[in-house]
Image (cartoon, rainbow, N blue to C red; front, side, top):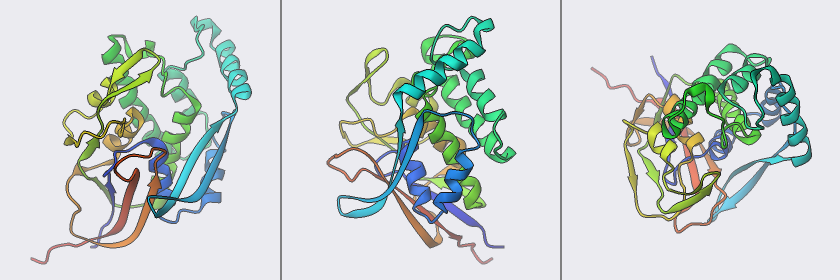
Length: 263
């Protein structure tokens, strides 16, 4: 029996928006994808999907554009909703995010995959900040764009319907990046924690190539981290990153049949 496999070639790292962009570039119906996203009960954002180029390579650029006014309204609404828990913050915690997922009209496979990915981010943030998991408020992940990135990825994976998923080793950047806590080293501590046990390398590119969301996505999805396996490639997708670096900032994905060895 031939197996269909999906391979993530993380030559310039991985982030949530690059993942969705690359998967959509494989030919997933964009209208169907956007219809699925509407099953999540959050507002305050618009999505822009466009064909573009990076260093002459054409691919898809996926952007979540936050409507700051609606976003604040939506956060306040959820804040009042959870007032009994004493949440006086606008950042969501894991429970809030799981609540959004569970109350959506998405199918169970997409719900479970989304919750698994969020779980990795929450666990690593809890560890880094030395807090119980339920006290972690996502700066990066509670944000609407990260919710869309993670659930959107799960929707795409469900639509592709492959048998196995593999990934290359992960290319990490270096340097420092600004976050809610000040300047922190790259890779971010949460990213590094999520990637424990996964092969990583760096070529000294001064940029955050793997985001915590990207790390959690690939950890949840990939069965193994290997060079491109023996396969017959059928489709190739390019997800364009937002950065101009000395390397091409794209995520490449391949879908094809696994070449099964004859015995």
